[in-house]
Length: 224
Image (cartoon, rainbow, N blue to C red):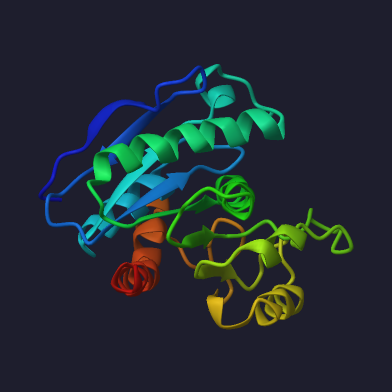
């Protein structure tokens, strides 16, 4: 990694968040990454993904929701999660100097980003690292209605064994979104993109997804 990480705060309001960013000067775009419900911004999966995105020419910022910093296991209510996301995004916009800024993240982080974008947050695109389409074992409880309101490009990276998204259901949802959405199935991957019988470090697993996300982000940057 040529550009060192920087730690600080994103946003200026009461919901400002702690964050880490990699801001190489020649980046074609920024990607703001929210973490999953059970692990924060310094989880090896997120770190590996963000550092690998730097080699794809994409600057990244990852941040913690407030419940994670407070040491609580249960996520904050949706309005607080959304406020944190919007602060993180606003902070990156201020640093981006006109470069396109995309949003996304792992599971919960990606879902909250999509809700914010559906309601007007000005991300140039969305990258989902395992979208939680429904609770495990409850495919009837889809979390997809708001996706139809999103007009920017979306990339779904999803394990085919993910209990949070039955493959057939997610394929149908993505198809309904039309040309603005693309699905990349990770064969045999679970919700953490681990494949049964294959030993892999979480950092390496996250880094491996950058090979799919990087070209998508560069295409979106070229469209902006």
